[in-house]
Length: 419
Image 1: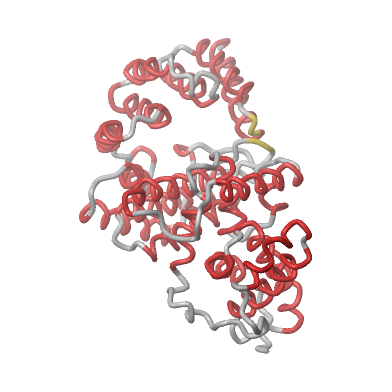
Image 2: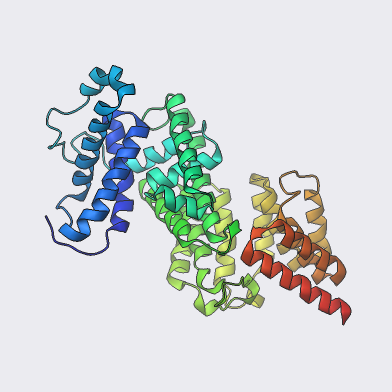
C-alpha cells in the first residue's frame, strides 16, 4: 500500500462514478450497486488516511464494492430467486477483479453514461438532482439532505424512489439511443445548472450560498466537458458557472449579508476563473451553434470584464438578452432582461417587460418578481410602491440572507418616502 496521507475526499468523489459505472455495467442492479459503492467509499474514507492509499485506488474500490454487492445479493432473501442469474455474472475469484479498462470500455465514459442514467426522464427533477449528487457527485445522503435543508430520512426516501424509478423504467447502463442523445444531454446540463444555482443562491435557510453544491456542479460539468470537448453548450455551461462563481467572495459581508452585484468589491473576484470562463465562451461562440448557456455565459462575461459597475456595457447585454429570448422562452430570463432594459431605456421600459409575466403561474408566487419590480419602481421614483414590493418579496423568500436584504431595502425606501 502507498503510504500517502493527504486528504482523500476529492479523490473519492472523482472515482465514485467510475466505480459505480464499472459495477452497474458488470452486474446490473443499479440500486444495489450504488449502495455497495457507498459502503466502499466509506471504507476507503476510514482506512486510507490510516493505512495509506492503495496503488490502484479505483481497482481497490471496485473490489471492495463488488464483494459488498455479492454478499448483499446472496444474503437478501428477497433476491434468492435471482441467485443463479446473479452468480453467472460474478467472477469466480471475487478478490481479483479485472483491472480497470479490461472490460473494453474507457473508464471515463462511465461518468457521462451514469449522468444520463441519473437524469433519466422517468424521474422527477428533485429525484434527478438527489441521485446525481449521490451517485455521480459522491456526496452522502446526509450531505445532500443538509444542502437542501430536509431531514436525512426524507432525502433517503427520495433517493430510494429514484433508484426504484430507474428500475421500473427498465433502464440499462448504456448511452441513450442516438435519436435521444440531444434531449438527454439537455436534461443532464439542466440538472447540473440547477445544482449550481441552488449552491450559488440557496433557496432556503440561513446561508446565502452552499459551496459544496457549486463545487460539485463545476466538477461534474468539467467532467462532461472533458468527455465532450467540442460541444459548445457544455463549454457554455462551464463558462457560465466559472464566471458566476468567480464573484463568490464578494457576494456577502462578514456577517453573511447579501451584497448586490453593483456594490461588490470587484478586486475580490477570482480573475483566473474569469479568464478561463471568458476563454471558454469565446471559443464556443466562435465555433459552435448558438445556445442558451453560451449566451448566458456571454452576459456573465460582460459583467465580469467591467472593472466597475458603471463600466458595464448594458447595451450589449440587452442585445444578448434579445437573442436569448428568441431561443429560450424562460420567465427568469425575462426577469433578468427587464433589469438590463431598465438600465438602457429607463425603469418604465423594464416595468413594461415585467408586466408580461403577470399571468405566468411559474412566477406568480416567486419572490424575485416582486423584488425586481420593487427595484425598478425605486429607480422610477415610486418609493411607496418599492417599499410594498420589497416587503412582499421578503415575505415570500425562504432564504434568510435574502429576506434580511429585502427588508433593509424596504426600510430604506420607507426612510426616503418619509424624508
